[in-house]
Length: 340
Image (cartoon, rainbow, N blue to C red; front, top):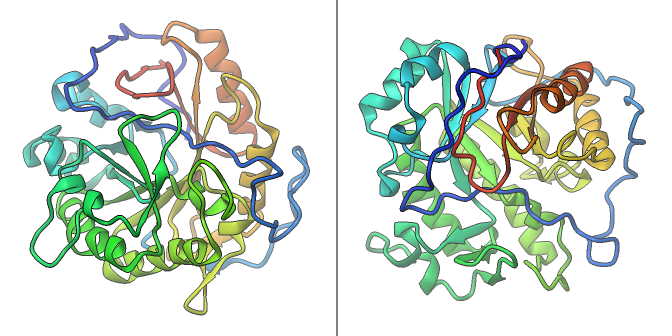
């Protein structure tokens, strides 16, 4: 399905909330720092041959789009009913600690079950303004106290620390406290910063050892086992490390309901990212109803008024049969562009 059209309708540039909700694509590893490749990358404009269909373990999306990603509050979002009418997949930040949305407001966005609402879940890093950075229930270790899991400051994003997803205490915090609070409110998880798994053990920005890499794959398997009816979407970490990964004897790719990648066609073309998404498409994964794995792109054109740039990015994504969302800019995602 296409986005909700092509002409801009009264975009509103909202101020940043007091809660810092910046989301972003992580640094792509350089050839010197990246772990050894699991398999050769696909050529940028070559679609791999389709494999026989394999059914994924998640519920799968009933619709491919249109979709939207927004990390502000309900007040900044504005007309919730309009958002619910326009989009079928809505990614937002439903962490109760942010107080971005009430349960009633989330129900409006779900539109009686027609739409699927996902919540952002940072797995590869921990933000210092999350409540669980410094406070956790008895028996659990908050991020700040778990020095063993910390992998250094996230360069370029002050107030955020890389975390080893293979660390048992960090996994326990996410699986027993953070994820259940989200699962009670939304239909699924939108996993961020798993591109940490693509970093080498010697990286100066989020080093990840082989045990860290495997631990990240294992975490997603445990998340799937704990929440079999929830959707799981992974953002950005779409290299062969995840595509060909195995956890507990299960192909990692079959644990997901969808993948997404930022900045594939705008502000500039990323042939490597497109090739990775095409390689995932070539896996020919299906959900229980026979629908394909949801593959989405989120591109940024600088302003909700840059219609021609949006049209160009939209056309490129649709030509590859990806589900596109085009926004103004990366680094906050607190403005929705309504393309009509």
